[in-house]
Image 1 (tube, rainbow, N blue to C red):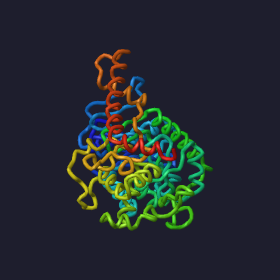
Image 2 (image 1 turned 135 degrees about the horizontal axis):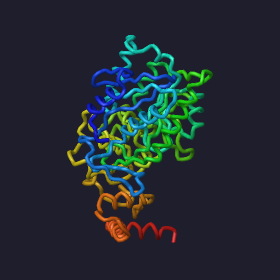
Image 3 (image 1 turned 120 degrees about the vertical axis):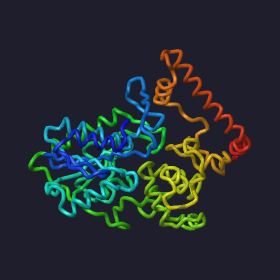
Image 4 (image 1 turned 90 degrees about the horizontal axis):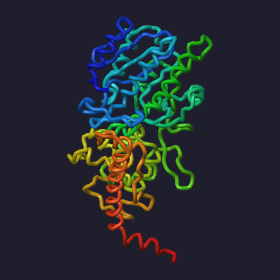
Length: 410
């Protein structure tokens, strides 16, 4: 967790010796025996390396004030453990600068295309990336091999949606089906990111099981099949229908006028929505849209990824001050919030935020020199006091609206 990308790159080259093929500042490829390649990227979005790691009392939850970097140091760890514990060693691919557009993966693809990499890569039967948030997600991007999806689902994973990872480049280049699996991190790209180690270890165990199975001579090769967008089964484009829930189509469906009135093109808005699916569920993004309007997607995108389209969306406010609502972002910016029902709050919003065991355990671990019953109760009381202050603020701000809504129909 504490190493920089360049230090980790050097460490991997030394660790695997003559089994490693590397391209400076791009990737480290480790030759294997089993016809499967595992992928992870070495970079994180955080500006400084991890200096302090906080753990829950049982050691399961870890985080850092600097940002723990689970995206994707969880994947790097998973690959090393899976390699160590597998009798037939899988191929490994560690890439650089995935977060800035798959730079290392692009170099890998170019060198494979030019014949500079081992021909055995053409014989791989599947690719597995470990770079997804959560506990049991499986994301296939533009790969539409139904048999492959059924196989991965049989291991306990649930199909979800995303926009990009390294397999988006590598899988079609090698012509083999690929999946991105959960690695136990949450709140990616924020300093509130944390890792659930049990969930990470569960994914590792399943990957080791897959590596063992794929080593059998009669195990099939799963070919890469490309989705045809706009047709039946389109994996990436969805819209919300009040009667039927989520339906295939463009995210912008029914919102075109609202999007264009905010100064964005529909194409850009769809791209930003698509990118956010790596961090949020469809339901969460739809809730943002329904509560704050379509412009919320652009504001959320700016907070998570920065102003990569060159717009004026970055107001210069410290990002950490914004990360206080669902998924690590605050919609809209704090300075613009009115905190009023019917405007930027809905009746479905929480009046009193919940307190989880994980939050309490991590707070006690990080804040208390002596950990005992008294310190736990004091920290819990402090958390409740903060929650109560927020609740009273919202209550006072919206008392008239609450009373009016409660009287309706009486």
